Length: 85
Image (cartoon, rainbow, N blue to C red):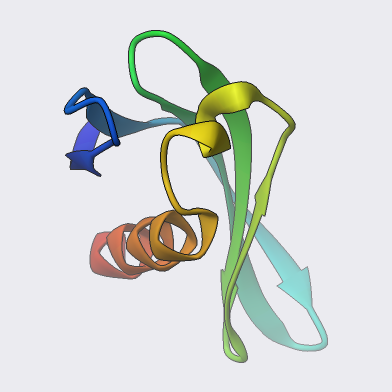
């Protein structure tokens, strides 16, 4: 579990990495990461694809983004995944 920041109500926002899978795509290896993003009250599923062309972050639906800015969290999750390489 990786602590990212605090939300509008000063609750910790975390990224819980559940699974990592390497995939071959066009001769290169692309890593897929699956996990949860939450603040203790609300959680959403997260899928991150990391490869030669950068990082792509996809979130599930949930009320979590009522409390935090999605673009900032998208950047933080991408940076956390890049640090895992």
